[in-house]
Length: 156
Image 1 (cartoon, helix red, strand yellow):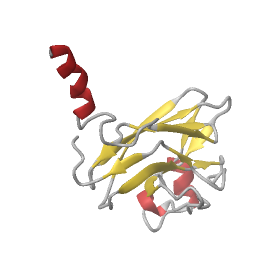
Image 2 (tube, rainbow, N blue to C red; image 1 turned 90 degrees about the vertical axis):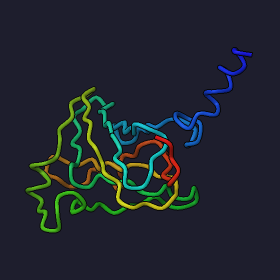
Image 3 (cartoon, rainbow, N blue to C red; image 1 turned 30 degrees about the vertical axis):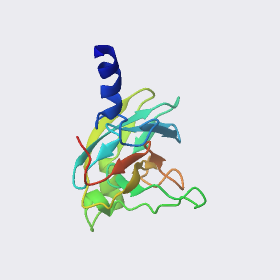
Image 4 (cartoon, one colour; image 1 turned 180 degrees about the vertical axis):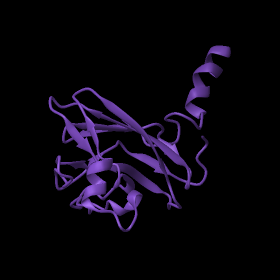
């Protein structure tokens, strides 16, 4: 009976993969792997984000426009708009964006915390914009993390 109890306990646990989405908390796009630290969050919690350069060239990670967005329906065209004002304020200039962007050499990574505001219950991913050396978006779409869920009863 002890073996059966030990085998069942992880499946009933609220942490790990018990409630949140199944699968990888990381995704790779445009030479950047973006990962979140957990599969589930409550509204207004903080998310630990790791961004790693998996390409063979330097990449420039934006420090102003990183955000969490609901995962679009599979039939939708995912085209979020780049908005550096999110973290750098309404008066942000191209100069400020360039000063704050992070150059990541191949294999290098960064960790940052994103504080969620009020968020409805839904599946989300973090978007991280990659820039050119002069601070323009390098791609029409951002790199994104794997999928996580936000819901009021998350047990973290």
